[in-house]
Length: 634
Image (cartoon, rainbow, N blue to C red; front, side, top):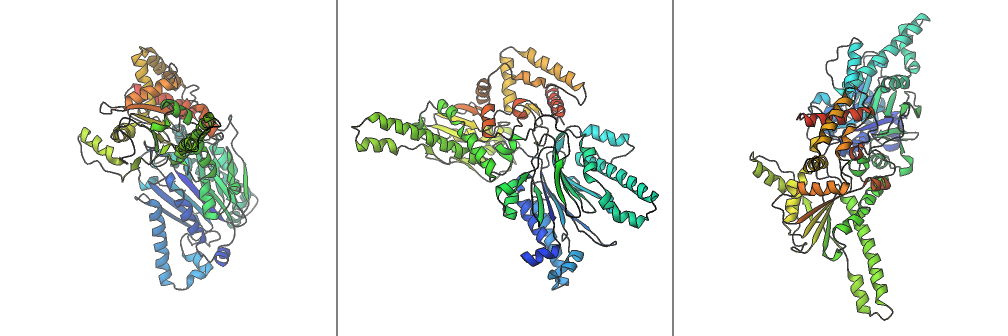
């Protein structure tokens, strides 16, 4: 994606279902779980590079002995940092205790992160400062194991203000209004209540405090507690949590917006935000890695039992985030790879129309780096079209055709070249706007000598266009240096028209080039009353509180076709210095769903939000724009 946007996080949960001595005997690894967590988190580094954290819980540790280890980092390379620090600490301990690495009882009692239960987190700091205090996992500590709770999540809740106020009304005095800490405190509150209820019940039966403490882990119903809290959440989320006594859970929102996959056998249970990460780390086939269904909870009991069951009542059909499949998730996933190729292929009819079917005078390329798979699909579809035309031309020659005539037809191949190259990130030390923009333009470079001056069309595919800033300031300027007759920018995603509020960093209406184009068209055509009416209706919807029922901002786009808005986007992106004709092509909504039939969530393209909180956010985003407030809508 040329306009880099960030995605809220990824998780990794690992439960070793055998005694740790088992893994030493079978795999020769005393720190089997720690090693697997390192690879599991590295294989998801695309999901968060601003921070990383990990927690480990050891089972069966005696009182007076630490049973929880935690490490966090917000350095430039956080995954590397947390594991480097952890292994360095382990090496220091082993230097003082040579030969002990094979003594698994000693290992568990003396080495950090040598327990049975792990929870890791990768963070993009899209909201608030990237302070170490914001790095997951978050822990609520207690001397009672059954009151200890750890959480980490890939999420954004649209009603965090209401949830915070609920805590205040309960008599609490939260130290901060962060979304994760609010969720943690709400879970902790109900966990405490259930602990107290069970304690009172067992105390009335005459059990001692020690006896109650021993049976409490079996008596607690963690699913019931999580369900009670999560029923009030509006948004997209996958939360992983650990209880100090060894239970663990992962819960997915009722719309299935944020992704979660799991694999379980007699040795391990693993949950991650990326399916191929699980496949690679544990060498399991695609079919064995299951997707956690929308609204379901995966519960791992301290005794080893694992269950996946419904938890949140469905509220209409699921709406998994299609941007996951277009851009965010790893393209090594078999399903996603196939879908991204289809996204590229389905654009070819519009591309051929844009170049007048003139393949002889067209060069195809991609904008690095994430559009490569869509480019492959586009390339293959162009090749297929070309082969069909060749067959028609050969047949048209008739039975008397000469060998050289046939060879000439078959020799033609569309030109697929690596034209755009992404160089190392360049820092802008210059304060003058014109000089800064010139420096930004050098983030990308081009391959010279492949485009014929004022003769060739140049088609460049990107996976999505959000703000258009990089296209305008960099990519179009450097492509124009090659002197093409026409530049066709192709987006494998539809026009991004609305903010996301479920975990992707797209929060401000004015940032979207499609919104800028629609507003410009309204003003050029004397339709300002639509803008005024939409502003008024958004204010009315916000007056409903958290129950906004409609998205009035869809009226901004209603008077125009997708092609009209695309044409205006091209006009906004083309600066006076660009000599080539510029056209921009976007994926259609119909073809998006044809290519990605499972990921039906498309609210950032269509404005059809799956929850009431989404409608509230888009109304707030439009009001912020109209009132010139450069702030997030959530």
